[in-house]
Image (cartoon, rainbow, N blue to C red; front, side, top):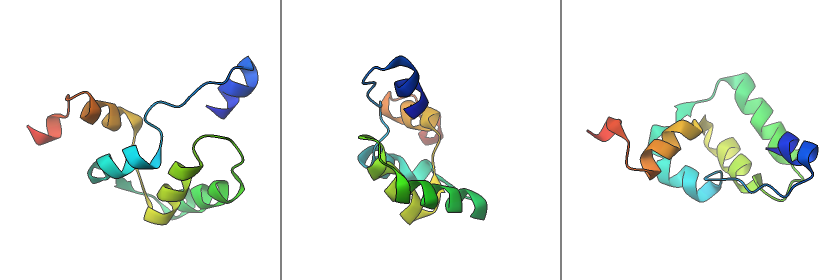
Length: 83
């Protein structure tokens, strides 16, 4: 998203990329590998974009991540894991 914002010069807003959405769908999360957690923690510590900081902090604190596709499935009621 940051690259897209930089390349287009537009104020592109994230969709379902925040700590609240992560908390609501965390049961679909997967554990991060050690190097992934280190990268997310490092990125969270130096993040200066107007959006996404809360999500990076939540990911770093939890040690788990979730694919946006799983979030979308849940929020649109297409979550087949509950079926």
